Length: 155
Image (cartoon, rainbow, N blue to C red):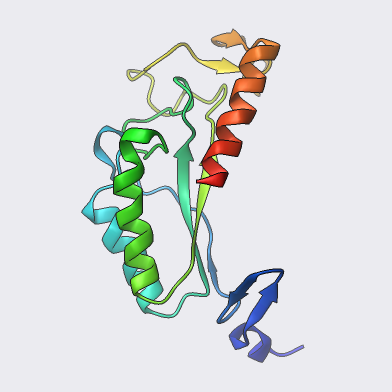
């Protein structure tokens, strides 16, 4: 196998990429008040301008009170949709496609311990280390979280 295949267009279902180079989701920690700013717009635009096949944004918290564990990470909630549209438009204007990495921090709140917008929630209420943290989600909490992921993906 040679590397020429990396430079060839790639199609899967309705998505066609100009090449197989993909920016893996990497969080930038530059969004003030959980909202994408010009730094994030510019960062993703520059990658598209250089011919990246696909840009995947860094961690973007779903619309759930405890989904985000850092105020410098963007979220995908109604008050941030216009700012995200600027990111999408910049990448599209530069000729590239973009995908949003939706996420929920779960039990991983050690990144920013002094910032806690809501009680930590996770399916079990237990950190990967086995220590208790926050609250275990109810069946309804889990269903609501699945719903916000679906609504975010559909937007």
